[in-house]
Length: 183
Image 1 (cartoon, rainbow, N blue to C red):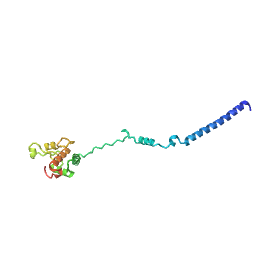
Image 2: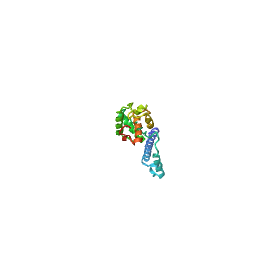
Image 3: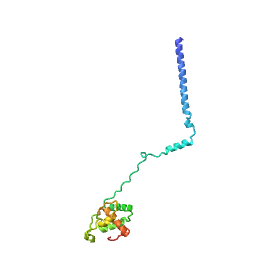
Image 4: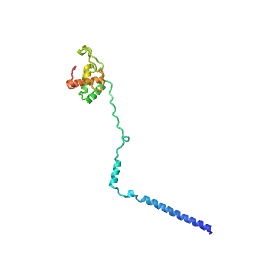
């Protein structure tokens, strides 16, 4: 073996030895890091650290994160006698005006046969210039005095007519249900 060959051979041997040693060292370090617990894992949790974690978890959601509440859909009523009575009953309930579907329906059928444009042109009110109008045959001064807020200011509007008449009947007779004849 020549000096050059011996130098190359020893360099190669030395390189292999260092490579194996380097790989072994790197592998051992990796194994040690994987298997050995870190200080955060090894140390028992302190009470203050536990409280801080819970406090962080209990942060109230922001408005952006909160689910939106569904808006209550506006109730839709049929545009007929049944729908007008049901809408009037809901308004009456919210205003504390007594009355039932049966009581309203019975009086409406007697007074106007369910025609919201009915008008009496022959009774004493008509002779005095204020004919009774609408489903429950209300005169304008009575409608004005007993009109229920939230309904149109229109004597022949079916819901406004029903609620005003029921309000009047409640004041005078205790309830529209107590009315069994012209009132």
